[in-house]
Length: 495
Image (tube, rainbow, N blue to C red):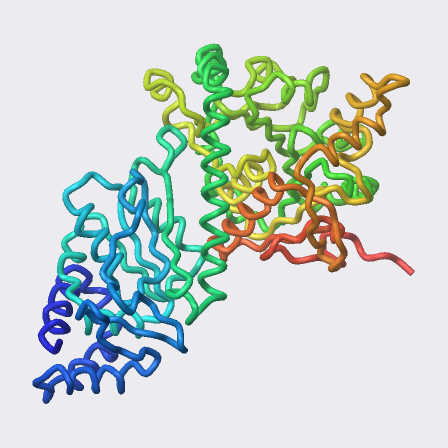
């Protein structure tokens, strides 16, 4: 077993020199402990001293097995078994811990010569990984071309890590699949970490399923809109031209969404406009104009006709409209100061991609509000306030009064199907669940809006130079977003 450690260590250093250097002290300590060891009995004793969290013993098959806190990591009879379905994925396979490594090693041996997207091992406690290297032969693992050993990896970096491993496939044109393997015995030593990772990966899987279903449903629409919008590519500047354009501007940004809580902010919107750069989503524009405020930027990226109806018949001469290459074509006839275009993240044919190439692409979490936040960050925002970003149904309302959506509900209402009845159908026809607002109170939401909240949470965590605040504490709480009760953007009240 002494030679197993040496062989594994040599292969590990060759494959991951930076990682080996990062844990040099721990590796040297282990190596020094093995210097005088010459037989298996002494080796087992040393391993027990180095890694007391495992109780090592021989299985009935003669192979090594181990237990941790009374729970066996592998079978006491035949620990070396293959996973039932681990070879069936074409995407990234993420292992949440690995015990001694039997399943992980067998998987890597099986996929070494196959075209897999990649293999990732997550282990928050490096000592568990190095302990495994002392017991089994891992050399075949380090021969896998697309392999990541992620020791003590921050949770918010796991998805980007997988996307970087996959390379060009990590986009909507060719959906990246991320699957995971979780053995309850392998994660008991840090259940909180692994539970958080599992939730992250489950949400990512659901997101990919939603994107795939969306692709099937709207693929032809994206293609048609893109062809009709091709002539506007030459006329419109791209969002890329605004990259860091406001980096030296000290004003905060105000992201205006159409949630019910916007109603309490609208009376002060003129004051806010004087101190903020205002970026408004399409669904909130009608309410903003009614309040006498033209936003600096309006965002509309949905390709459907109903998204266009949010701005149809309106005009905002001092605003800049941000539209996607696959937005409904009539959007590009909107009366405003200027229209800028973003390259579409949606899958369209290669000839159309080339037409919109260079316009700049905005990250999207599936909601127009996520696109608005991405543009503000691209433009150089350092502080972003949000208003109406409820991602929930505070007071059982779906949208702010006066919005296109809210007016449409009343316009099509009848004696039998009233506006209240239609709103109730929306609230309780979806997969409604309960979340917490910023005050700790219960608020109704659904899985779709929770997905948007997760997007904000992950992007905010990955963008430490940008602070995000909410002016509406009754909205669903997004980790990383702080409540600003007395922001500097509000003028001080005169006694």
